[in-house]
Image (cartoon, rainbow, N blue to C red):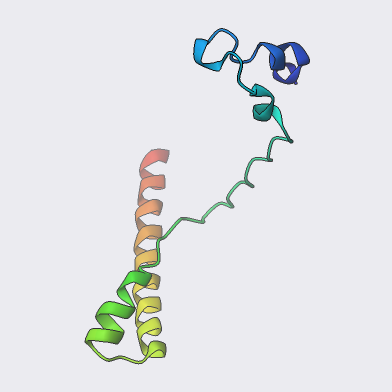
Length: 96
């Protein structure tokens, strides 16, 4: 890659007074990580509300952990279905 030539590495940060005399070689140590894999079509991100398990369900309502997790799973499944439906509507609107 052109940005990884020795000339670029040597010149990195030299035009900034606060970088002169610093060990800038550490910036170029190691290899660049691969980009994350592309997400398959139809997948979406959903944040499972695990903070709603212990305090409200187990401590306040005295539910057992299996029941509390089942309730959160049901809530999350509904949330995912709603998000998928909204995404589908947006995709349909974008295609028009």
